[in-house]
Length: 107
Image (cartoon, rainbow, N blue to C red):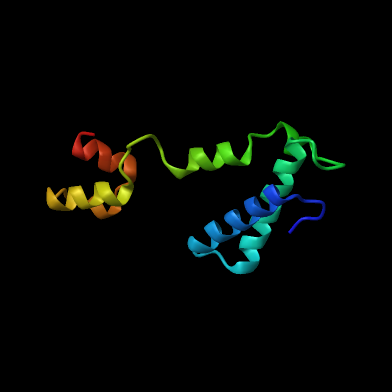
């Protein structure tokens, strides 16, 4: 856990670490991800003595994570589109990207 943290940041660190491990990330890498994220949030909130310009000016970690977690509200995943294409017997579906599957299925 990063030095000088408070209970909120400790909870945040544990949550991020556990989430990364659930995604299959090694414990060492999960700890690194969590520490970097918490340190960046501390810098953005003015809780640290020093902060890099990118820590302050860059998009917040929570915003970036939210954008990466899905491509839109209610949007099906590539796997869901693939299964639908499989049921409709779409030719070449295994080589298609999510966007190509969406076009082939008329989404």
